[in-house]
Length: 270
Image (tube, rainbow, N blue to C red; front, side, top):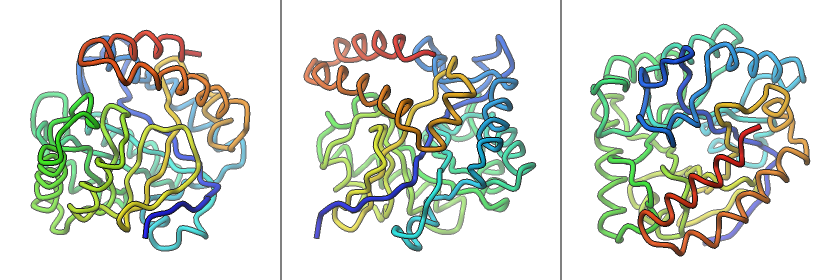
């Protein structure tokens, strides 16, 4: 049965963490992708501010799946599967924290992305490794049912070959959710699917929990990150307003949508 349930968990979306001026070293290239890449010093400041705010260790998707009603606090995720994942993981591990890393499986082992050994190391260290689709469609909700099923199934199979078990957690690339995306993910065995919708409400689609997340961009301040992790209304409300502004442009086709999205993302910088 499909429905909704509420949770106080706030999940943050990060991407790559790089040295200043080295955005091309990890993850996807281009101006749009670079808006999501944090300089390593700023990322360290984010973690320090979140810890200082008294948020404690983040929960993971596995915690949510074990008991959706009991998982509280905050969660931290990293999209794309960029090569910086292992360095990010070490920063988290130094605090006794564990994160969630969502891998674009078509890019595994290519320049700027994790390889099989890095994926296994992340999982062995206790981090969640999940799917970020196979080819990272920018407009995933515009894909056909067959395309959606292929994206999730190929990605799940690729990760299962590395991890020895099928992942049950995934995140949608491009930030564009539709019920059809969730139906296809559930069919591939995904039990928890993260979107880019700035919400803390959990929904259920075909037995798959659908959870929102709050975006971190390259100039997001440590104060804002800590506020989001703490569940403060102000930072969350700001993201909802900007997300509502983006909703009408999703009806645009192809490049029109992507250009409008990029323009609104520029307004989202702190």
